[in-house]
Image 1 (cartoon, helix red, strand yellow):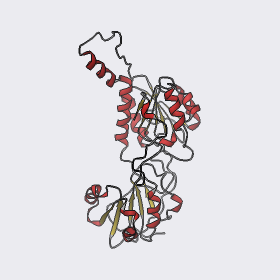
Image 2: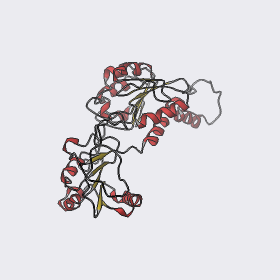
Image 3: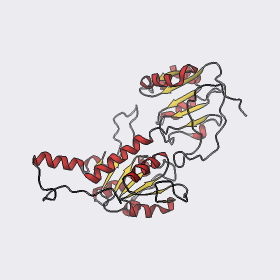
Image 4: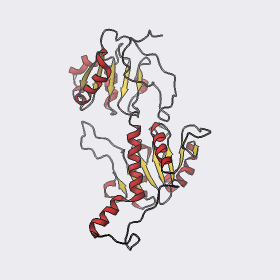
Length: 332
């Protein structure tokens, strides 16, 4: 049993656990170490670490010493001493975080803070049991607003209407030949794959537009959460896909969700459906999605996440292997 931590502003508020739906408590919290009694040092590893350190210092006050460590510098032997002195380590969502954690495994390390909601890039088995692992869940509103920006664009076709007006330069009959028409969101079905913090915020906004909100989560909730008309489990995914006008992927990437939406699932979607992925690229099969969009089996896709991510070694890596940029029905 660890002794109580010294009083100081909390840096993180998470658990070392596999994430189900974001915000679900799957495991019990592990006791944190209390070795940072004299100087509590936070090491922030990030490509532009110096830009976020001032705000972090202001938030934590004088009880913590915050040190920036650019990602490239973190790979050198000169960073070993700084990493070894870290009481808390803030890491970016990249594969490089694994080696950073391995180098920072010292008796005083008590907190590992991810900069993202997902923690699939971490090897939790290699993290000491006494170290608390936290994810970030402060971007829920921003991501939900991004989702609704995409939903409104595809429902109202603002870009097409503006393009038509620029070309015509005059007011024409609203139902004239060649006019871009649109429907309304009211009554449309919003399908959420995953119902954590992001899913809940999307549901709130969808309900405000009088949409029929449906969701699947790891476990069924009866009655469903406020604003959700129906909630099922992963076994109910076919029903969700069959009825939804908009399908939002907002679940964590785990072995059980990798490739969750493949060719069979895409074939079950409505022909006028829009797929919006704000979770992780690998949850949707890249080849299957490209084929479905190219052959217009579904109406469109909005991709905020991808299958490959640039790294310091490959800074210009194309995030996809299929030419999604050539498809007119993809918002990138």
